Structure formats: structure tokens, C-alpha cells
Amino acid sequence: MELLRLGAVGEERPYVRAADGTVHDLSSVTAEIDGAFLSGDGIARARTALEAGDLPAVDVEGLRIGAPIARPGAVVCIGQNYAAHAAESGAEPPKQPIVFFKTPNTVVGPYDDVLVPRGSTKTDWEVELAVVIGKQARYVDSDAEALACIAGYAVSNDVSERAFQLEQSGGQWSKGKCCETFNPLGPALVPADEIGDPQNLDLKSWVNGEPRQASNTRDMIFSVAALIRDLSQYMTLDPGDIVNTGTPEGVALSGRFPYLAPGDTMELEIQGLGRQKQTLGKA
Image (cartoon, rainbow, N blue to C red; front, top):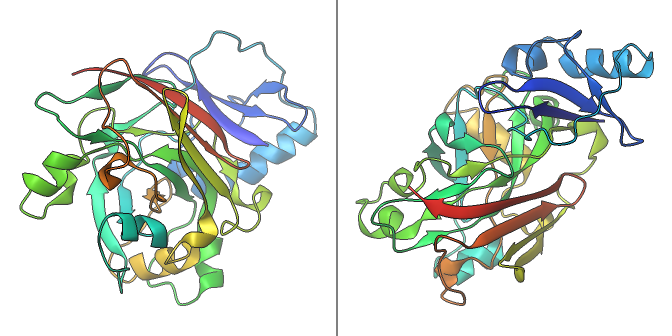
């Protein structure tokens, strides 16, 4: 089962895709896929209604695919969380998670255009496993408790402007992370219990059809559970919040590939979570 939000920008409606590929209208269960839905046992209610045949199948061909979670309260991001990516960045593996933030309004649909910021010289791509919080995480004591706070997972593109991030920021990474459209998310929110082990998922990315990143979440320095547990000691994660868990090697920052320019395309994929694609435009 996958949760979807389909429709024009600002007019998205909730849907669910069944295992057989059919898409069903979820509006009889909820008006929106958001924090309130997730914290109110929404995934279980959606699954029950789907299995009971209470959700009508619909033809959604031609509908825009929006981000699968509406109005996240926070987008918390982790830097240099893959051993090989830390190495290609010229940094020692961090002893503690590196934390920065993106503004929630950076989140767009998985096929929406990404806008290269004005003055940009180093716009970069980053395929990441996004964690969507389903139950408040506050002073979590164990990995098991941390995983129990997760509603599901999605593909995330933590688009970055490296000159803004590293050369013009004074150490404030978020200056290179919060440009409009800089967090395509989706295509779907896949419930955590349908993914199993989040530390064994393949991640890949392509630019203009050419391979860039190819790794697996087992290369994470800090596991998904460890990240949620650690973050919960410093902040409260609420239902609907997003945690971007870091990107593997193969980005332009490495010096191996050119940075992005208007007209380029990015494609990103995570095992079991689907694939997204964006075209670069101008801000």
C-alpha cells in the first residue's frame, strides 16, 4: 500500500495505491495526508478501508503527483551521513550527526520543476531516504522506540546550492538548502511496516540519464533509528515532520561531475519507494 496526494498545486487530494496497482480515493477516510492523519492511526484506517473494499477505484491518469505529506512542520536534515560521501567531501566521518534545516515550503512534488536560484553557480543533487514521523518523538530511549515513531518513508531530493552553503554562509548550511523547490518528495509515502529494514535499501540517481549515485542505506554512519533517537534529545519531532537522512557519494561537490544548469534533468530512486524526476528551470 502506498499513500499519494494527487492534483494541482494547492488542490491535492488523498489517494492510496493497492498492491495490484489500482488507485483508490481516500477522501472518505481523511481530507488530507498530514500529521493529524498519521497521529490518528490513519495508515491503519486506510489499510482497513482498502481491504474491506470501501474505497472506490479511480482513474488518476494525467493528475499531477504532489508531495505525499502535506504541510510538514519541520524538515530536519542530516549532513555527511554516508561514509563514502563524507570521504568525497574531504571530511572525517562525523562523531555526531550533523544537523541542519530546510524550510517546509521547499517541499514540492516529485515531478515538479526545480528552479536554479538567481546567482547560483553550484546547484547539486542529493538522493536521500526521507523519514516521515507518525508519532511524537521526544526523549526517545531506544532504537525500537525510535522506529515506532516512524509512519513511513519516501524518496527525497535534498537539492543544494554549494556556493551558498559553503562559501557564502559563514557555516550556516541552510542558506544553500532553502531555495524554493529545493526538496522534491515522493512519489509516495510507503508505510514503515511495508519496508522492513530501512538499513538495506538501494539508492540511485541520474543526471541527464547518466548514472551519478549508487549506494545502499547500510553505508549510513548513523542509522535511521539512531538519528531519530539522537534528534529527540534536542528537539521534539511531531507527526508529519520529515527527516532527510543524508546522501551517498556521487554528487557534484565531489568534483567528479559538473553542477546542474537550467534544462538538466535529475532522476532519483530508492528501492521499494519509487522514482522521481525533475527538470531544472530558472528562478
